[in-house]
Amino acid sequence: MLCSSILGLIGLPLCLSTLLAASGHEEDERAIRNIVDQAISRLNKGDITAVQDFWEEHPDYVGVDGKLFKRRMQIQALFREMAESGGGL
Image (cartoon, rainbow, N blue to C red; front, side, top):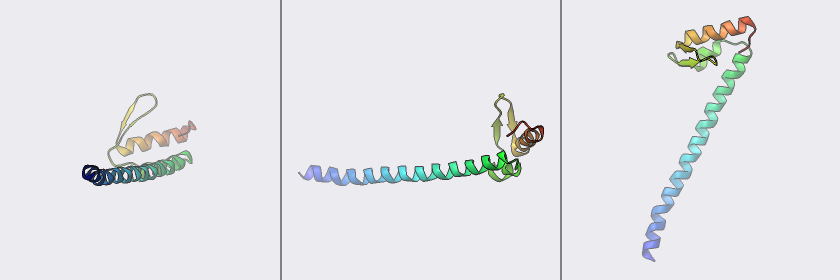
C-alpha cells in the first residue's frame, strides 16, 4: 500500500508537468500561427514591409521553384517583383 502511495506521489507531478508542457506548446503554436497569418495577410495585400517586420535579418527562403534567397533584402525584392508583375504573392 505504501509503495502505491509513493508511486502515486511521484506519478502525479510527472503527469501534471506533462499536461502543463503540452499546454505551453499549444499556446506557442497558436501565437506563431497568428504571426504567420498576419504576415501572409499583409503580403497578400501587397504590403512588402511585412518581410522586414516578420522575418529576422538573415533568413533563408526557398521559392516554389527551388531557388534559394538569403537575407531579408533579397526576399523583400522577390516579393516586390511578384507584386509588381501581377503574379501575386
